[in-house]
Image (cartoon, rainbow, N blue to C red; front, side, top):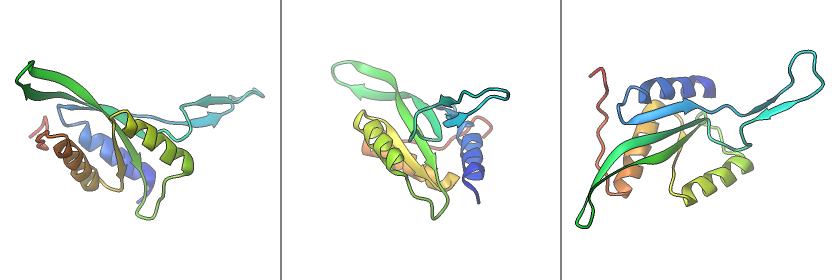
Length: 132
């Protein structure tokens, strides 16, 4: 399976969840037709998919319920794919700021990693979808 196929399957499946907002995040350099100039979009190393896991509620003795979102970044790779140095640097910066970074090789693998990351933060999670 190619990285683009893995990315498409993850985007389609996770977008069904009512608490996940996810979008494609292309990064590239392109040259418009009839132009000598190149245009760069995105930042080198950024994840393939970006999003937010929203409406996570935590009970607190001081504040009651707090509603917020968690930043989510998903980099898709084949079974043998590895992160580049720029992707590793971006991942480290993203997670240092509290984001959830997933190195995804399949939909199931991605769901497992998200569940684990949320449980590490004390958040219980279920994969209930809008069309279930």
